[in-house]
Length: 87
Image (cartoon, rainbow, N blue to C red; front, top):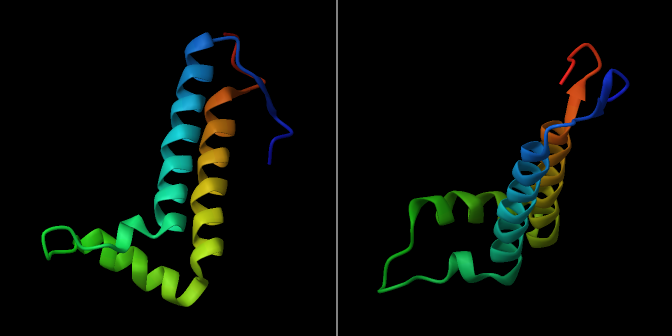
Protein backbone atom coordinates (compact mmCIF):
# COMPACT_ATOMS: atom_id res chain seq x y z
CA UNK A 1 0.00 0.00 0.00
CA UNK A 2 2.80 2.41 0.87
CA UNK A 3 5.63 0.81 -1.09
CA UNK A 4 5.49 3.42 -3.89
CA UNK A 5 5.34 6.33 -1.46
CA UNK A 6 7.96 8.53 0.21
CA UNK A 7 7.77 11.44 2.62
CA UNK A 8 6.74 14.66 0.97
CA UNK A 9 9.11 17.61 0.82
CA UNK A 10 6.23 20.09 0.96
CA UNK A 11 5.93 21.43 4.54
CA UNK A 12 2.24 22.23 4.05
CA UNK A 13 1.52 18.50 3.75
CA UNK A 14 2.66 18.06 7.35
CA UNK A 15 0.38 20.90 8.47
CA UNK A 16 -2.55 19.29 6.65
CA UNK A 17 -1.69 15.94 8.21
CA UNK A 18 -1.80 17.49 11.69
CA UNK A 19 -5.17 19.05 10.87
CA UNK A 20 -6.52 15.62 9.85
CA UNK A 21 -5.19 14.06 13.06
CA UNK A 22 -6.63 16.78 15.28
CA UNK A 23 -9.97 16.74 13.48
CA UNK A 24 -10.54 13.00 13.62
CA UNK A 25 -8.94 12.72 17.06
CA UNK A 26 -11.39 15.26 18.43
CA UNK A 27 -14.32 13.48 16.75
CA UNK A 28 -13.14 10.20 18.29
CA UNK A 29 -12.92 11.83 21.73
CA UNK A 30 -16.35 13.47 21.24
CA UNK A 31 -17.91 10.10 20.43
CA UNK A 32 -16.00 8.23 23.18
CA UNK A 33 -16.96 10.76 25.87
CA UNK A 34 -20.65 10.41 25.00
CA UNK A 35 -21.09 14.17 24.54
CA UNK A 36 -22.26 13.58 20.97
CA UNK A 37 -25.37 11.85 22.22
CA UNK A 38 -26.52 14.35 24.85
CA UNK A 39 -29.49 16.39 23.63
CA UNK A 40 -29.06 20.14 23.73
CA UNK A 41 -32.21 22.24 24.23
CA UNK A 42 -34.27 19.05 24.09
CA UNK A 43 -33.12 18.28 20.53
CA UNK A 44 -30.51 15.90 19.18
CA UNK A 45 -28.81 16.32 15.81
CA UNK A 46 -29.49 13.85 12.98
CA UNK A 47 -25.76 13.10 12.61
CA UNK A 48 -25.60 12.19 16.30
CA UNK A 49 -28.48 9.76 15.76
CA UNK A 50 -26.67 8.16 12.81
CA UNK A 51 -23.39 7.88 14.75
CA UNK A 52 -25.32 6.46 17.73
CA UNK A 53 -26.79 3.81 15.43
CA UNK A 54 -23.27 2.77 14.39
CA UNK A 55 -22.09 2.89 18.02
CA UNK A 56 -24.97 0.65 19.04
CA UNK A 57 -23.73 -2.09 16.74
CA UNK A 58 -19.95 -1.60 16.96
CA UNK A 59 -19.52 -0.32 20.47
CA UNK A 60 -18.31 3.02 21.71
CA UNK A 61 -14.60 2.17 21.87
CA UNK A 62 -14.43 0.50 18.45
CA UNK A 63 -16.28 3.41 16.82
CA UNK A 64 -13.88 5.91 18.41
CA UNK A 65 -10.90 3.84 17.26
CA UNK A 66 -12.30 3.73 13.72
CA UNK A 67 -12.50 7.55 13.65
CA UNK A 68 -8.98 7.82 15.01
CA UNK A 69 -7.57 5.22 12.57
CA UNK A 70 -9.22 6.98 9.64
CA UNK A 71 -7.63 10.24 10.78
CA UNK A 72 -4.21 8.57 10.95
CA UNK A 73 -4.78 7.09 7.48
CA UNK A 74 -5.74 10.48 6.01
CA UNK A 75 -2.69 12.07 7.64
CA UNK A 76 -0.38 9.40 6.21
CA UNK A 77 -1.84 9.76 2.72
CA UNK A 78 -1.43 13.53 2.98
CA UNK A 79 2.22 13.34 4.06
CA UNK A 80 3.31 10.59 1.69
CA UNK A 81 3.88 11.44 -1.96
CA UNK A 82 4.31 9.15 -4.95
CA UNK A 83 7.88 8.18 -5.78
CA UNK A 84 7.31 9.40 -9.35
CA UNK A 85 6.49 12.94 -8.16
CA UNK A 86 9.47 15.26 -7.96
CA UNK A 87 8.48 17.85 -5.37
